[in-house]
Amino acid sequence: MTDLNRATSALTEVDKYTAEIYVDSDELCTVTALGTWVGTLSVEYRLEQGTAWNVLETKTENGRWDFPGGGDNWRIGFSAFTSGTANVTIQGKRSER
Image (cartoon, rainbow, N blue to C red; front, side, top):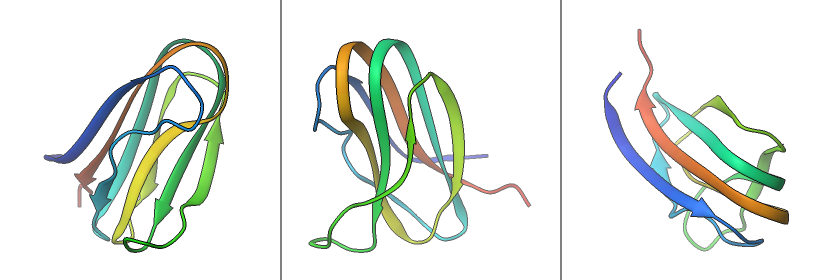
C-alpha cells in the first residue's frame, strides 16, 4: 500500500476536525484513533465542496478502521466530547489488488 493523502490531529474538543482529505474510488479510507479520551468521534464524508457532511460511522474507543473510498472528501472529529486527547489519523491508501 502506498500513502497518498493524510491528515493527523490531536483532538481535544467538540466540533474540531482533521483537515479534509480526498479519497478516490479505488482507495481505502483508513482511520486510526489513539490516546486517552472520552467522547464520540464521527467519521464523515461529503461528495463535493459546499455540500453537507454526512456521518458514516461513530467511534467511542481507540482502533483502526477501513472504509471503501468513493471519490469523496473525508474528515474525523468529536461530535461529543468529555475529556482527554484523541490522536487521530485519516488517510487514503490504494487498495491492494
